[in-house]
Image (cartoon, rainbow, N blue to C red; front, side, top):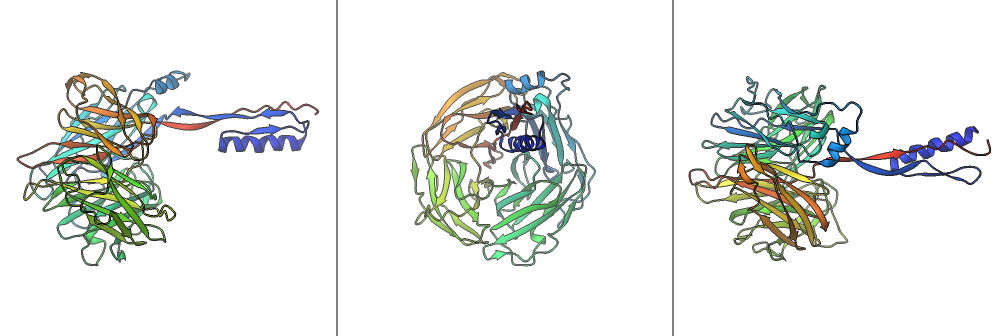
Length: 513
C-alpha cells in the first residue's frame, strides 16, 4: 500500500472522529466510507456535588436522589460483556477553612442518617440530616443509574437569621459559573460554596461586579479547594467597598473543577440558594414566577465589551405582554456593570415567566440574569431566586416533589410546543403517571395536579420535549410554616443523559497497490 494512501486514510479517520462523518476518495476514484454519522449513547458516569446545607442548629435537611427510567440506558449496559453493578452514591466532603465570617470553618462531619443511594431507576430514595454539622456531599452514579441522575437538597430552618425553605438541585462540577442577584449588603450573608469532588486540588478565582463595575477585592484569586472538600467564602469580606445591594459573582477555576452555589440569608426576607445562571446569551428565559409574588427584582450583567439594551416581557398563561411596572419595558445594562430593576405587581395573580431579548435584534449582546422573588409581607416574607435557564433539549428532572406543594411551570418563548411530563413513583410507594402538556407560543403553562397514583413520600417530575419549539421549566415547592409562605424554586436543567459518540469505520482495501 502506498504511504500517501495510508496518510489520507489517517487524516480522514481523524476528521471523522471530530465531525462524526467523512468520506475518502482513493487514488483510483473509488469512494471508501470511513465513518458513519455519530450516534447518541447513554452516559456511563455522572457526578454531582451538594454544598453544606446550613449553619443553623434548627436546620432539617432532606436529600432526594433519583434516576429516571431509560430503556436506552438499560439496553446499552446490558449489551456489555461484563456489565458492572450500577451505583449512585453520595459521600461526605471535608470542610475547609471558611474565607471570612464564621459561617463555616472546620466542623465534625455528620453524614445523613441513611445514604441517599439509588438502587434502581424510576424510584426516588430519600435521606435525612439535621443540624449545623451536616457536611457537603459529593457523589457519582454509574451504569444504568448515571443517565439523568439528579439529587435535590431541601432544608427547612424555622427561626433565626437563616429562616426559610432552602432548595437546590445539586450541580455538576464545572470551571465557570455566573451568579447575578448576589449581594454584599449589611442585611445579607451571602456565602459562595466551592466544593471539589475530585482527588486532586482545585484552585478558584472569584470576581465581583457591582452597579459601578468591578469591585476592588482581596483574597479572591488563587483560592485553594483541597481534594474532596468544600470551602465557603463570605462575599462581604472580599471587598472593602461600600455594601452593594446588587452584585454579580463570577467563579472560575485555574486548575481542577468545582461545584459552586451561593447560600443567601437575608435578615429581613428569609433565605435560599442562588444557583448559577445559564451561560451568557443575547436572550434569556427566567421561568416560574409564582402567581402570588409580592416583589420581583431583575438583576442582569454584561460580561462583554458592548452595552446591552434588553426588552422585558412577561409570558403569562394567555400570552406575552409588557409587564406593568417595567416602565418602557426595557433595561439598559452597561458593559461590566450590574443593572437591576424592580417589577412591582408583576404577575397580578397569574404565574408567569420573564423573557429578555435585545431591543434591537441587530445589536445582540450576551448577558447573564437572575430574579429575586419575595412572597408574603411584613415579618412573614420569604425569598427565592430564579436564574436564567437554558431550554430542555432532551430531558430534565427535579426531585423532592410533594403532594399539593409542587407547581411545575413550562414556558415556550418562540413556538407552540408539546412536552411529556412524568411523575415518578413515590419514595415510599405509588405508581408513575404521565401526561402530555401543550404550551402555546409565548405563554407559561402550569402543572400542579400531576402526582403518582397512591403516592407515599416524595416523587420526581421529569420533562421531555415531544414536538414543536423550545421549552424552559422551573418547579416551585411551597411549604408554609407558622404563617410564613416558605417556598423555593428550582429551574430544570437538561440532564445530559446521553453523549454524542462518533462511529469510525475504516476500509483499508485500496485497489491498484
